Image 1 (cartoon, rainbow, N blue to C red):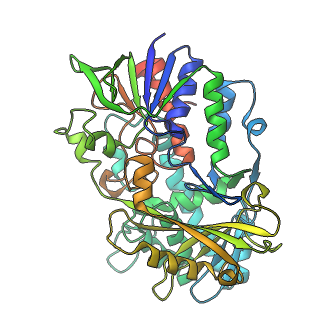
Image 2: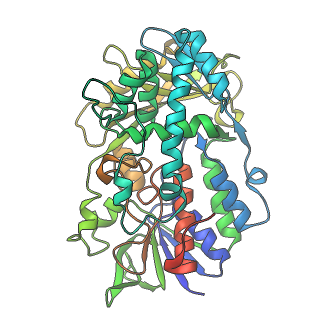
Image 3: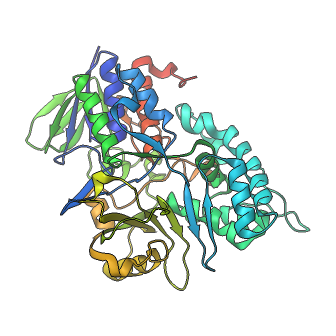
Length: 477
């Protein structure tokens, strides 16, 4: 068995570390910050607590598998896990509201018919049938298998879009899918909202982004008691049980290479740590920008310099109890210059001082590198959130704003990666788990299969498989 060095202590990196430790490797994680979790952080003040990253979990089977493969206690014995129902409440620009049930195709169709008119549910259901085709065509290569050496087949659009117009023009973007196939502005806005929530502009996202609503509405949305930070705590504890060593407050300054292969890392204190394999869990752009590896001239790097999107998050401390019919998640669609925002209102005593207060998180997707007044923008977000939280303005005790600069401080880059998507000429395929430098592997949201809690966990399984089984590893079946 070998010595493994892991750079960074995000969820993908820790998932890799736990699996490799179970396989008998000696694993050490070096994290420049003072804690683990990466983007899955927590902000606490005056008895209120908030997730600073993702607020919901999709595809919990990924973490169930991690806990089954790395110890005796299953995931549900380590964290409280519950389905969110309704999965989301949508408040459209015209004031229409609809509650979408969790993982119920028939229930969703009925809710859409009731809110948007007869036929809306059928159109959405027909669309999801086509979305399933895209899911079935891409699920294994995008989620469960290492990225193929030749990813060109994934550059082709897998969504069987309906043809439109006399010339039968092809549908190339998600926005076009909504306009041509859903035939109802609010249904199109519903589809767009899924793209924005994952950091994609629907006008630019490929049609294959239809897999995002399909995934959520098929497998459901889940909440971890105590917030998503509790999931990071559980994965960290599992790593410690498997004798993974963590070294915090210690930055890696270089991936050491000999004869063209990664053989260890150099630390900021001048030490060099030898390793048989190095796993980088930090963002690929940060890995390159900080000159930790010397492959800036490669074609591989050029594919990962495209600027993406980031998040602005506003944490709201409110006086007054949460009303009984409040939705855990409400998407307030943009109008009149206000952005589309996601409002999270978990009914969780661990996040508030007492039953007479409430902790609310409001999030919006923004360009990663804009120059703007974030406090002013946060004000627009809170105005939008007022449509989801009755009497919000009068209940507000204080607010805390997290900007793209805070995202950069936590993760090394302001951008928040989205999940891998087929189509778009391959532009939305992340870095392969096997890096251009032999012996160096990529795990986490900036590597295959992309961003998100579930995807980060999948990257850990893929990297561990590639190291343990070698180049012949083809994924789990």
